[in-house]
Length: 324
Image (cartoon, rainbow, N blue to C red):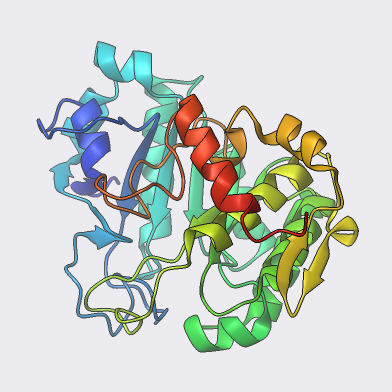
């Protein structure tokens, strides 16, 4: 049986006609959150077991709560039908949310059979992943978040090694249907992050790249966000790897910092000049507006195509500290 309430990101609620907030970038994915008060205790997460954050937060985004029928009706309105390219469930690990998410997936598939659906959750086995796929989910994301076991131990809860093994097993059994999240700025080096990105793509796992965002009430609320030039280098590396333009073993690192992509600058500019490297990454149709930053700040992940001026600024941030 479906649960009676579900949370939407504030931007999603706008697209579904459930609020009237002002925003200059609407989501192209309907972001829905199921569950509260996670059993895990990740240091950066508002939903963590010991978090003192508001219960309606995930990252810096507010997720208001609505009756299920309001959300399902909202998915059918013309604006949502025109603007949304997929539905994404964020499943909090509270012991029952995964089953609730499956019920929603089934209902949405009955109403909109062609709508792609992804689930970002913590399934514990291949059988649970297979069950999600059988319910109509086209992609399952298992968030690794941390680039190394050492960083995972400091910022996450559970085992990096077991999550990594499950990711690889799932990608082998369900090729093309598995993704992960990686967060830049948890304490890893650029070399650490770039190498795990390469490893994921070598295994057929899609990467959604995030910038660490301090959230009040979490254990990492006083930690600093990554510098933009640091994030731009990782973004560019991710894009080059994803597009098969270059590999991490061709890059040059100095004390963990990326200083060269192993490409002439004119060729690098040719690859990056459209600005796609600096847009939100992950599943197709996912743009996550303002998930990592305020609209008043320069964007880590652009939720739309960049203007020529924005591309130039990102390029300048990127190359300022590279070897010429």
